[in-house]
Amino acid sequence: MAQLIFPKDFLWGAATASYQIEGGAADDGKGESIWDRFSHIPGKVTNGDTGDVACDHYHRYREDVRLMKELGLKGYRFSISWPRVFPNGRGAVNPQGIDFYNRLVDELLANGIEPAVTLYHWDLPQALQENGGWGNRAIVDDFAAYAAYLFDVLGDRVKKWITHNEPWVVAFAGHFQGRHAPGLTDLPLAVQVTHHLILSHAKAVQAYRASKHGDGQIGITLNLYPSVPASDSESDRAAATLVDGHNNRWFLDPVLKGEYPADILRLYQERLNSPVIEPGDMECIAASPMDFLGINYYFQKVVKHSEVHPILQFEEIKPEGSEYTAMNWEITPQGLTDLLVRLDRDYHHPDLYITENGAAFKDDRRDGGVVDDQDRLKFLQQHFAAAHRALEAGVKLKGYYVWSLMDNFEWAHGYGKRFGLIYIDYQTLERTWKKSALWYREVIRDNGL
Ligand SMILES: OC[C@@H]1[C@@H](O)[C@H](O)[C@@H](O)c2[nH]c(CCc3ccccc3)c[n+]21
Image 1 (cartoon, rainbow, N blue to C red):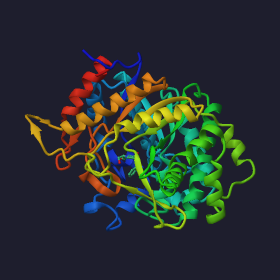
Image 2 (tube, rainbow, N blue to C red; image 1 turned 90 degrees about the vertical axis):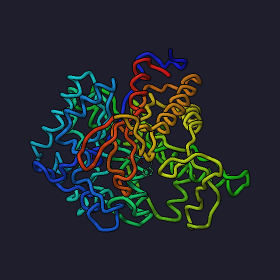
Image 3 (tube, rainbow, N blue to C red; image 1 turned 135 degrees about the horizontal axis):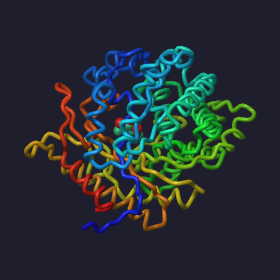
Image 4 (cartoon, rainbow, N blue to C red; image 1 turned 180 degrees about the horizontal axis):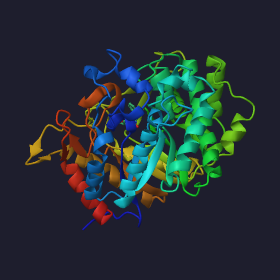
């Protein structure tokens, strides 16, 4: 019998993203995405892996929904490939593309699984990138039009919408660090991209409110981290505050309070002359309240002062004696409790969902026909318990989507990093249960652990 019981109707789910699982990268009229382009550039992705085939979910979605049903999932979070629906990003729709998502949604509903759709999970149409992509303010209207079309076609059945997955990663990994598509390294541009992403989120929220199926819920998903100073020195505490501003408050404040945090805005505008904010932008952002906030939590950050960068004067450290995942991410379940309690303390926030939490491990052990991933089972156990502590502290947490339903294309790391509850053999595309999935099935059945 479960000791930690979750609220009635707590939404237990799992999450994926289009470029990471679908494959069919050029099938049935799909246009090229910036990740199709980026992953094919030699040296960008480990082993030269690409999303050309991935898990072949585009063709195997019925089998995958059957697996979700066997898992007992209440909800499934997935993203739509913008270029599969609009091959050129705008203009003509690809009928076979939207047909795939219609069939997927119908299959989920037929199996009693609630779909939660992410509009943008990093796979921008390459045609829009040729036009400046997220660095060109015109993208705001392109995104709003793309969103409005999907609300119109799928909104009668899809009642949970997420505008963006992790605008921080889109902006800084893609436009400053260069490790994600489109592979740029321009800090002022990255900051301008954050503004265009947040503005496009607001426009999409307004489009949802105006749509004929606008009776569901819409929000955004942010990757958030507690930011802990490496020591109690003034310089390390200042570095932790800077990371909290750069990673968390720069996104939380506009979407929850309608304004950028003053400390970070001043730093960016004085040192980077970015972002350019046009008259009316902040009013538009402030006038677009969400129904929920999605949180992607993986680890907390321990931060020290550093001169390694003239503006972003911080460096993360890896504490000794901690456990780490195959991504070399420290395992810090208490950080999830701390993050949720902090959000509750510092923001008037709508419902909260964990839209991603999970871990990569080697997954090289078998026990009969099942992958013996005790390390992932323990990771989830610890983090579910951490979420329960936040619930006991009064936090309005409504659901939890495990990352990920299945092993998939882990961006610049390719297929070598496995996050799935279900194991994928990339030679045969065979799906194999892991012990963590069998255990998760019982957590969902008992609504607790
Ligand atoms: O890295 C695991 C997952 C990705 O597969 C998801 O697509 C993405 O939403 C996601 N975000 C994070 C946390 C932030 C992060 C992103 C990329 C690389 C490292 C950390 C971890 N993950």
